[in-house]
Structure formats: structure tokens, C-alpha cells
Length: 116
Image (cartoon, rainbow, N blue to C red; front, side, top):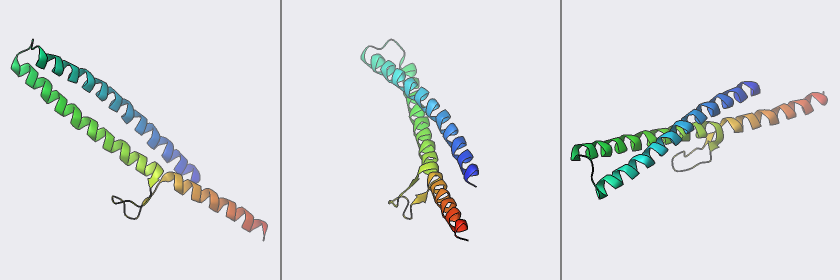
């Protein structure tokens, strides 16, 4: 069971890294887009429709970034867990805590079997 949880943690962290890379990519696109919007509003060289399209792209990027942040948060919660909070009244036991508990149980079983 310990090995199964370790593998599960590895795969979740692998997925989280892919999401983080996509998040970083979108953040850099957003930075460039915001700079472009700012420059166009100061000295317009595009038509108003094009500037509005840039604003729409910014809204879409913001939405995608928030979605990715939510995904990373849920994956972190699954691996790390959470103490009781307003959002998680009973707390959440993450995979790390489960592995630690099983390791402790493993040690207890070894000492028990030595005593038999």
C-alpha cells in the first residue's frame, strides 16, 4: 500500500508540474498582452475593434490562469492535505500523511512481531 501511495503521489506531482508549466506559459502571455494593451491605449496604432479583441483575450487568459491555479491547489491538497480550516472543517488527510501513518504502522508491527 505504501508503494501504491508513493506511485500515486509521483503521478500527481508529475501532472501538477505539467499544469505549472502551462500556468507559467499563460502568465508570460498575459504579461506581453497587458503590455501591448497598455501601449495601444496610450498611442493607438490599431483599430478599436482590435484593441477590444485584445481585451477579450486578456479576460480569457485570466480565466484560464484561475482555472489552472484551482487545479494546482486541488492537487496540492490531495498530496499535502490540510488542517481544519473554514473551507475544510474536518481537514484533509493528504497522501504524505497516509504514507507517514503507514510507515509508523510498519514500525509498530515490526516491534510487535519481535515481541512474539
